[in-house]
Length: 190
Length: 115
Image 1 (cartoon, chains in turn orange, purple):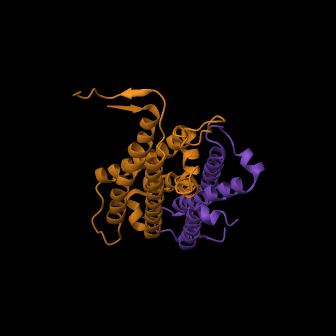
Image 2 (cartoon, chains in turn yellow, blue; image 1 turned 90 degrees about the vertical axis):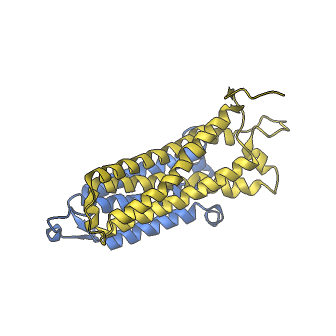
Image 3 (cartoon, chains in turn red, blue; image 1 turned 120 degrees about the horizontal axis):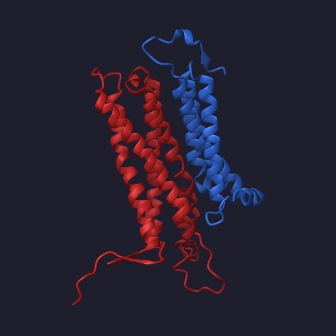
């Protein structure tokens, strides 16, 4: 069982940071909705509040790591230009997608949207984390601030979903492959 | 800023909403700027070339770096202005949501290509 270095980094970017962010979003939305609701008369416990602050900061870190690894590690491999005369485009995913009208949309719409819309995610969640760090339980007294934070986290989930969906579909049609091979485990031979 | 109201009306048990409003509006501006720089780089060869901060990543490096720097600058300026104030949050939120939705829509290539 082995994996190429480029596949490994794509995995780290998409599954390690991106998918984990998507999973974390639901927890953040529930907690932000429930905990700081003006209808919730119970005062948040300090330890719970500390946990939510750490949770949101971790989400912001995940979002930044996802876009930075995507833009500066995986994307250069994706958009690499093949040398003149190259006929096998397997190592050049963008060109491979563009070479066929049945797959070109995955680049011209999918990647073109993904590479930009994904950056809205760290902006939105950094704001959400900063507001919760600043206000804490006092957010209950600012329902409009809480509503704005919730809207931005919802939109960040939507934007991350777009990026994740197109990332998965692009990887399916033209995976980023190559580089040194990492041997994970030796399989049984028959 | 017309969105500001007197800080004298702030209830003593609540901190002013200004710092939160600054973060929210700046985030809307940041989302919108990502789309604006992406469109500018797509429509102008000169800007596209200027946006190549790191060649392997191409214009995306400049588009996102410019948007992030301006987002942080906007946040810092708004925070400094609104730090101890209460602002009309309904208007700030409306502006931030509009910018956020515009950012989302304008990054969608079929819409971005209309410009």
